[in-house]
Image (cartoon, rainbow, N blue to C red):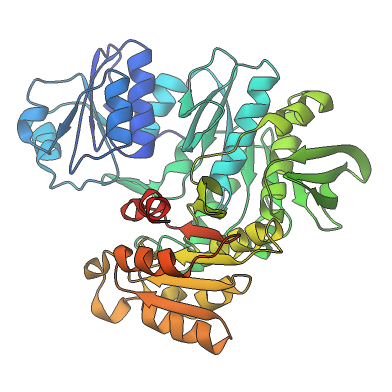
Length: 473
């Protein structure tokens, strides 16, 4: 499925990456460096943590896109999807006739070429499912390679170069590059694939749900009968996609039709216990530090793949128990005055709802304060204006920030945080609007009480609100 293979020459020694500070591009740069290639890279408005991470790995980052950055004539230029054809380095690359490719093309050629791909796709849960799977394989002695969209606490990294036969890849449906507007996941030919969910997202590149669905339908229709698809049975959009597919299909979830079924969940102290049935027969009882039914589903998808790879149930169980989670996924950033500050990447309405619900299960006797920054291209658009009010039902107090980059969105398409707060109040919620991060910190410094769980949700840095709030508290 790899596209434009002719762009990558045989004898590559020097590689330049344009937009190197993206999560995937940064990981790719580090992997290529470890494989012995000479790496250069550039980005705009370079900032930690990725810039610091790259420097620690011996990769210098040029803080500005300039033609001269590629004038030395690297053997290959990897172009990230964050830049357009008008980027000065892209213009120079084309003018010089340099070889260039996209990030997934480079991953396929240099990292995944001789490995069996385990690909995790879907709107939600990709990062967590991929991370659990990578850790289970590592604990089983499979020494996997992986590249994932979040930092695994067990590795303190979002990538790992292993010597085993498997590579775990988070299959992103976002576009590939300015010269390839198809989704990144179309570049991979997996041995086993996961489909976690299908919902409308990425409103900057997808027109509606049908557009998103067509992307996944195109990909899974192209899988061979030798590929196994592990699909979530609790999502109607996923189930509808399964018709007329030639690949082998197994379903997971909590429903009666699931081949891998979750049952008998319980919470004891910081542990979540759950039973898993395989084809109607008991497979095992597991415990994990993760919480929320969505995370148990993510774990079950990883369990199903591990079983396909002949990993014993005892090893799977130990792997789940020792999985430390992912940074920015229900991550406790600190506690002071008996107030806990939690960081989460949630931004889509479904992710916000499920995250709040999951956290509430572990603090049922405490007040849950939900702080939300609409920052993505989708959440800053009014496409989810009527949906978001239902996402905060389990929160006791809600703080909504004005979108920080609203000027990027046409006036008629803009999301209104003020209206969201009005709608939340109509639903009986205590909710407040804030024009900036500082005003949220000022408010919570006075309003927070001992025992509160403050859940902060954003896909960005949120002006370092976590550390600043903890300091004020």
